[in-house]
Length: 177
Image 1 (tube, rainbow, N blue to C red):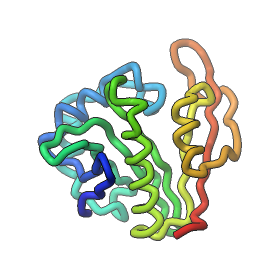
Image 2: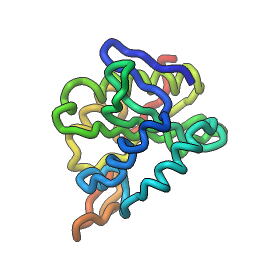
Image 3: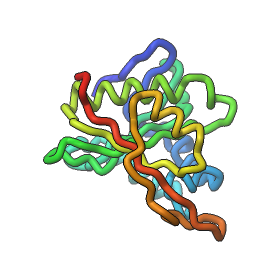
Image 4: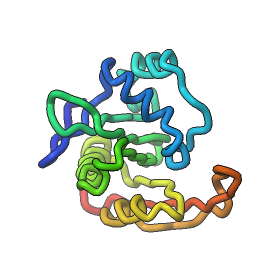
């Protein structure tokens, strides 16, 4: 996969030197709720993951990309296609921007726009979906900006910090590409 370039950012395949960045994100407990993570990851496991990141989306059923602002790296966040289902032409989407100061900078919005276009034009997907906690106003605003619609709420879906929380499922049907 080539680099996908926007006006201010680009998204690219993961590289071996992304080890510390991915390790930091996977072990940041403040975002475990949105990433559905429950335990820390070792550097060894992250290194193994990166060594297998070359797998085709049809083989791995996932595509994880780094969100960057310039060609000299470093990554600011990650954006994923997961649960790739080529028979039914759909996949889930997840996005995380690591540092608070980079959020609300249009980085996530530009990255999501690039990924949607790639998924619909290059992978010929018919639909994308996102699982978003009902309290996550920023993510709900981001996805609805691109036409994702809420299609249901899973009650008491996630258990975090001793509390059950609802999770909404948002869906975008490809009608443009």
